[in-house]
Image 1 (cartoon, rainbow, N blue to C red):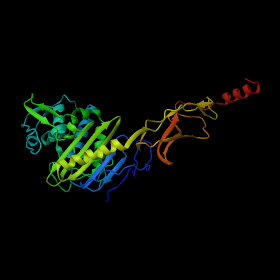
Image 2 (image 1 turned 30 degrees about the vertical axis):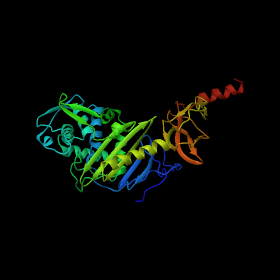
Image 3 (image 1 turned 30 degrees about the horizontal axis):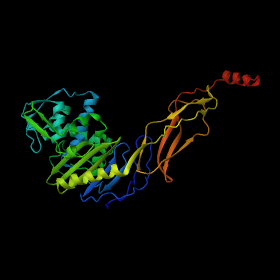
Image 4 (image 1 turned 45 degrees about the horizontal axis):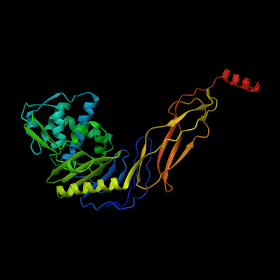
Amino acid sequence: MKQILSFVIIFSLLGSLSAYAAPAALQPVPEIKAPAAVLMEKETGTIIYEKNAREPGFPASITKIMTMLLIVEAIEAGSISVEDTVIASERAASFGGSCVYLEPGEQMSVREMLKCIAVVSANDCAVAMAEHICGSEEGFVKLMNERAKQLGMKNTHFSNCSGLFDDDAHYTTAYDVAIMSRELISHQLIKEYSTIWMDSIRGGEFELANTNKLVYWYPGCTGLKTGYTSTSRYCLSATAERNGAEYIAVIMHAETPEGRNKEAEALLDYAFACCRVIDLNDGRELPLLPVELGEKSHVKLEYGGEQRALLPKGAEPEYELKLNKRVSAPVRQGDRLGSVYVTVSGERVGESPVVAAEDVERIGFFGIFGRLAGSLIGL
């Protein structure tokens, strides 16, 4: 796949938003030498840049983005607690590579396990958590693949929870990494761990230093995960947030860690310099909409959600409100009765629904009769 220059060619929005082509940015994206890369805006899921983004390859420890997602979701669902004690099995303790050298039978809290996975990419802790949640790594990997399907990760399959092993059944793409990264950073809990630069476990006896060096030097960095094997080479999903906008830069299979970090920074710099996120409703007061045969003559309206759109900096959006011409009772709260369309330089960049803010029941026979009588006598 050739490198895609300029801005967005596919505009994937949340909720009821459709796909739109966004206007081109004023400057080209930086040259990326890594074999595959993606730049995504988190709130809307807009792809700003991609290079070979749908081609599968070995993900190395970026695998643990999905592992951490399942852990965080289990915590938030209440099925496990950060205070729970995890006991390391002999199998978990046997894992090498990036690890904290768990001993068989060693006890550690879920909080410390998650911290070790997020900060130092601990393979032994990833396996221990998989066993704690599902009883076995195999069962956990099944959940990983199910969750990947739910998220629309069409070119991903996991065979382990750590990424330590490269095999033909364990693969993903830069685009799919961005998808699961976006889902993970939607949970504020993970940022308590992914933004740690240095920490320790075992009462301060074992020090931790984040494998993602952008956490230390890149302003606004929120994570997220590094990866390396001799086959996959150097991979990184880097996330950063400034002034209410958050971006995800994925670099896959770079030749050096320095090159990987530099290119992720370059993509993030481009996003912050050239893009801005706007609300698709401009806060205008919505009119009342007439209702035929309703107990009320009009229905109140409201915006149906908080959709946003990504624009090049300097571009000014125009808003157009379009409402249904005829509305008949009964009307139910939440019924879609129109839209706000947002355009830039004549190009539509977003659509936000306008919905009923209340119920309006259909008027009955006696109500109609009373209304007619009232009109006849001038009431």
